[in-house]
Structure formats: C-alpha cells, structure tokens
Amino acid sequence: MSSPTPMETPSRRRALARATPMTPATQSADLHTISLLVRDAPGVLVRVAMVFSRRGYNIESLVVSPSAQAGFSRMTVTCSGDVAILEQMIRQLSKLVDVVHALDHTTSDRYETEIALIKVRCEGATRRDVLEIAEHFNAKVVDYAPESVILRVYGSSEKLDAMVSLFSPEQIVDLVRSGKIVMARALEMT
Image (tube, rainbow, N blue to C red; front, side, top):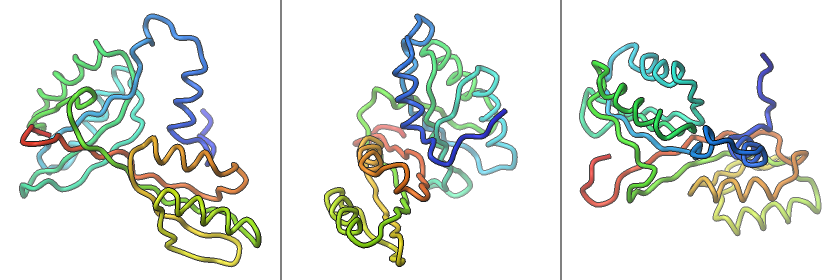
C-alpha cells in the first residue's frame, strides 16, 4: 500500500473523485460533517474509528478537543460515502458506551472553519506575489526565511482550497491543515 504524497490533500482527492464517473452507489458520496460528544476515556477514538472502518468510510479529517463540560471531548469527523450507510453509522456511534450523542451537521445551519499552515518557497520577485495572495486571503505571515514564508490562514475549507490552488506544487514546501471544526448555530445542539 503506497502512502499519499506530501502534496495530496483532501481537496485534491475530492477533485479526483469528481473527475471519475459516478455510479448509483457513489452518487451521494459528498462530504459529511459529523459531531460527537464523547466521554474523555481511553479507547474512545479507536472505537469511533472502527465504526467508520467497518463500513468502508474514509475519514477525511478528524478533530478532537476538550468540550465545555469537564470530562467530555468533542469530535468532529469529516467523511464521504453513501448517505444510507451514514445514517446507520450515526445510530451505531450513538450506541457506543462512551458516546453521549452523534449528529450529522451536513445539512444543518452551522458555522464551520478550518486552519492551515502553508510553507511557500519564494525568493526575490516571487515573494511579492506570495505576499499579495496572502493579503487577499487575510493570511498572516508567521515565519520569514530567506527562501520561504509560512502562512497561517483560516476560514472555510473552500477558502483554503482556493488559496492553495493559487500556488504551484513546486512552490508549496509543506502544508498542514487542522481539519474542519463545526458548531450548530443559535441554541441547536452541536
């Protein structure tokens, strides 16, 4: 099994997936955002990941962080696959001992964001172009070096995808993305 290349990002995998013909089984394979509230206990992450693995779902991103309540954590999972199977998986996730609740936020009213660090090779004349792109996307330069800069940008996944697409593969030395985090709007449960 080959490992992904350093430049293979979820957005590039999605672009490749869109380029392949869709069969009835994959027509509803859009990205889904699932939020879980779990007890802070050893092995919870493994049990949650196994539910996805058994059903053949690929986890695009996974973010785990403390919740507002002590002793609990929030998991945000971005994945793709068939909607009918996803509904079964959410029911299975809800039945896990340490899972308080699991919700699909794909179609709900929500706020979501992501953060990325992008190391861009830029020397001489190209540095100005890179800094103009950074300014346009409200990215902050967090490190200057003679041949590169590190940019920190946050926003929607589409915004990050758009910014990354403006750089050539030769310009991007390294790319780290946090994965999507989500919160339901108003007083809805996340």
